[in-house]
Length: 125
Image (cartoon, rainbow, N blue to C red; front, side, top):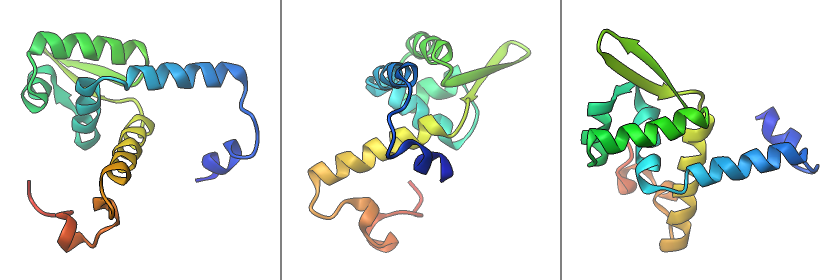
């Protein structure tokens, strides 16, 4: 994680701070967080995502359009279908870290700190 070490201990350029705030703003929506979690696993169509996040395809399409403008997701068309994927692993890592932080706020021993057998990690959901 050389990139992590490069940013710590020095002030990043103002333009990156402003863009980072925009990224956090984009992630400040439960549906978009769920979309990012679903795309962390694999590329998916709008209908697949709609089913996974429990929203209409139209609503998911609107969220995906915002995520595309923010360059968090990318699209690929195959015939009449459009498939979405994460542009890179960073949005997925941000969401994962935010969920880990939430676990710390709610639990004495967060799930991600428990042994796999206790936390359910690796079990089928």
